Image (cartoon, rainbow, N blue to C red; front, top):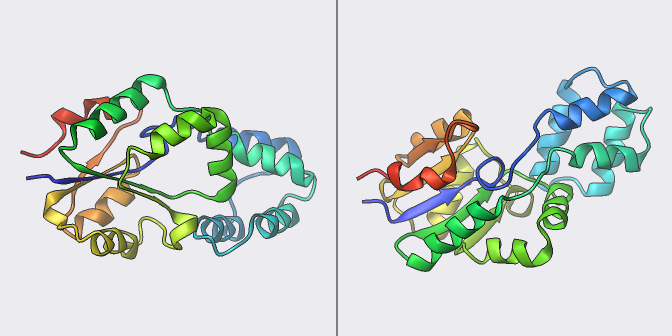
Length: 202
């Protein structure tokens, strides 16, 4: 029986435009994701870099952009949470049938942009639906590394086989499966989090 549900944030609740950042950076000579930039992004998502350091180091890789242009391009991926999803989540939380957790790979700039786009009151409504709200840059773990799932399970005394993890990235759900966690790899544009009831294992 499922007692705990662990949700991703991006493209589960908040809509993303995953190509928007790369498209915007092309205006400044960006030609594709390099190993150096990928490592920088992962370090920033784990909170190992302050925002100022991240922007300055990214500026070395994309020197034709100003720091403000880099931040604007970086944040273009972040859209908004449709109100119907927020209402669905609030109804789910009100039922108190499951313990609800959020587990997101994100960073300080993207969360600031999400709050700006949602509005502070809507963001607080969203956040208050969860027992714990885990952001990778605050806990210094990052999906799909198994230690992030172990952290959530251990910190909250959750049993893996009683837990459902929902994420739009298959690599992340496959990693969670190795611990015995039930998973739903949500297919963006085909499925929606509001289909949840039909996805919970019996």
